[in-house]
Amino acid sequence: MTITKAACVGRPRGFDIDLALEQALNVFWRHGYEGTSLNELTEAMGIKKPSLYAAFGNKEQLFLKAIDLYENRPDSLFNTAFKHQYVADVVRGLLLGAAAKFTDCSHPQGCALINSTLSCSEASESIKQAVLERKAQHKLQLIARFEQAKHQGELNADCQPEVLARFISTLFQGMSIQASEGASIEELQQVASMAIAGILILYVNPK
Image (cartoon, rainbow, N blue to C red; front, side):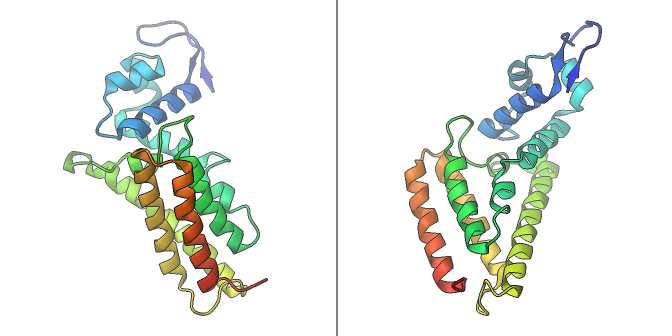
């Protein structure tokens, strides 16, 4: 989507909202919500502050729009993994996918959702709560998928979908932090493969 209005103070001609939002996402991803200044955002987005306010509202609204962009991409971690028919492949897709995406050098390392609020203070409580709500929704998605697999006989009676979902969410958190601290894809793949092997042995019924 592109805005092409007459030139005015703070609004460049041909201001591409989608591209600007992509640039804002990368800044939040790299520095976190509180660590990102408006000056850094406008510089990365190639606009002035009045354009930012006119197109996105304030910093908080811009951040939420950027996270929406991150999560709704067709190739996002959940969207890609949940395309698989069998739950074993879903688990592989989630964990090996996280290892690959969190270490992808084409963007900041780790998970944008996790990285953005690691050091939020009370001043950013509303942002922290918004991110926690999104993480809770992800957990509910995992629980629902595992409950479906259990009902279909893919997961055995010992599997507790809520516990398995919490386990995978915990792995995401740890893998994201490790990636942001410089862990390689090979190192995270080793962690993912170990977790996958344990899940398959403990809970997944043979086809």
